[in-house]
Amino acid sequence: MSAVSLSDLVLRYGGNLPRYTSYPTAASFTDAVGPAQAEQWLRALPADAPVSLYFHVPFCDELCRFCGCNTSVMRHEDGRSAYGDLLREELRRVVALVGPQRSVRHLQFGGGTPSTLPAAALRQVMRSVRKFFRIEADAELAMELDPRHVPEGYPALLGELGFTRISLGVQDLEEKVQEACGRHQSFAQTEACINAVRAAGVSGVNVDLIYGLPYQTEESVAATARKIASLRPSRLAVFGYAHVPWKQKRQRLIPEESLPQPVERLRQRARIEEVLCAEGYLPIGLDHYALPDDTLVRAMQAGTLRRNFQGYTTDSSTVLLGMGASAISMLPGGYTQNITAVAPYARALADAPCLPVARGVARTAEDTLRGRLIEELMCTMQVDLQAGAAAEHDFAAEYAALQPFVEDGFVLLDGSCIRVMEAGRPFLRNVAAVFDTHRQALSSTTPDAAPQPRFATAL
Ligand SMILES: C[S@@+](CC[C@H](N)C(=O)[O-])C[C@H]1O[C@@H](n2cnc3c(N)ncnc32)[C@H](O)[C@@H]1O
Image (tube, rainbow, N blue to C red; front, side):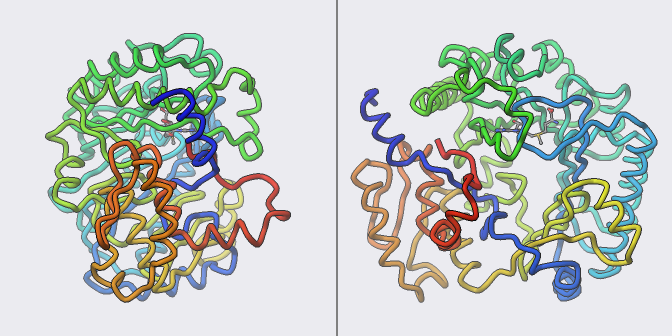
């Protein structure tokens, strides 16, 4: 692609877009959905429905300037342990509504840095999980780790508790980039962390990289990707840096002029992809890469790949129960999200016997249909508008809106089939957005009320 055509593409496709880890997206959540609605949806779950579990731990040992997540530093061991008690209390309340002994195939601890949960607290949470649920023998139990702060004995603990996958933040290996991000992490630290968890029997290893960070260049991101690929993680997530300083104050410490421009970001993304593919990884959806024998690749090939709040997943459950401050749950009736900040989340659990839910959104039948189309596009890069319930719906306007993508060589329209071409992979969110009526409604009704964009740039 020439520089001119890349800048043209940025002009046309460079807006602010969601990552479509749900539909409707979190931008549509309001306080019209609260604890009472959440409890009603939970009680209504079919008796035999399996569930997935997510535990959110919003603490880190230190804060990185680029980080867009809601995290804080909690130094006191007592505070960290007390948070484990809150997770168990919330879990107990949820189980009282959905009933015990439901089957679980996927469980994840995310954050923040969930290994800030002291070993004894993690043991207690997992004891509650195993008491209340039936964890299937082939279940995936996953946790995010920060390679700079792995507590002594934690890898062995994860192995002992049956964890099967860890995700490590790396982002970039270049000194200048790390300095600007306030995250110093040597290659040796990352390697040692991977070796330790593998030695403990945790075989699934994911690594997160980011492009578009301050001072990154095509050469530097390619060097990072090559070096990390030499450690053979089974999966890599390659995110575009989301610069949202209006939402995340710590990002204001990053000088705007150090950030690569959108054309450069597209080039960096392409270079990382080139390196990873040459190293034997296969691209998955928008931003994942996996070794051919990884379950994510097998799910993609079998057409069973899914996308939820944790990103791309083999998790086929339609119910995700999220525990912890800011955790999101996916239920047949809609999505719910807990109170974001830790102190009010803790107070809500202490003050009343209900769930600490702050907001959410109900899903209509049309949302479910559009959500399925968006998820299929994000996972398999194709969708058939004549398949299943979509056949009953008129998508003429969406079909017409795809024409510019066709002219750019990103989409092939074959009868009722929409196929995103390899060249269109970086623009997958733009294609999905064609089916997002909530976004169209939000941007047409609230330009003054929301002067800052709700999402980061798509490119
Ligand atoms: C919830 S964080 C957990 C990382 C873990 N605590 C660590 O420090 O290694 C998960 C991932 O989100 C990604 N991430 C965080 N902030 C981001 C941003 N502003 N833009 C893009 N990706 C971001 C990073 O790749 C990070 O590894």
